[in-house]
Length: 98
Image (tube, rainbow, N blue to C red; front, side, top):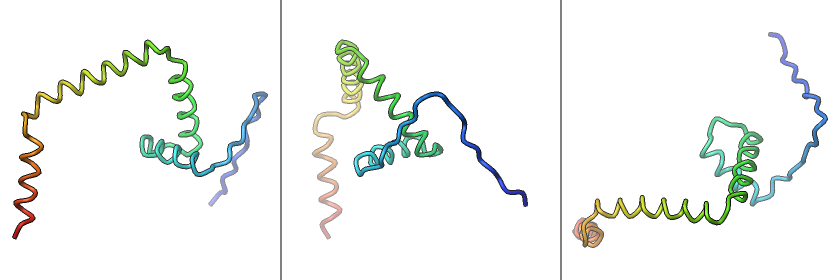
């Protein structure tokens, strides 16, 4: 069986070394759940790009995004009538009582 040889890609661009501290490991673990087929280094690259995009957004863009999310949540509220949660919890108590 032939052995596989990996060569480093030469580049003139700067390279950065990041130590995987507990907080960095947690962030990468979260990213790995979102992109399970990506390597940890590719996940870290995605997280950096998303973070840069996020902080480059204007406060108005963020506010509109939050407004949109809240509107979508409000639409879901129509699916559950008043008292739904209390009724559901009541069913749990009934099943727990022998």
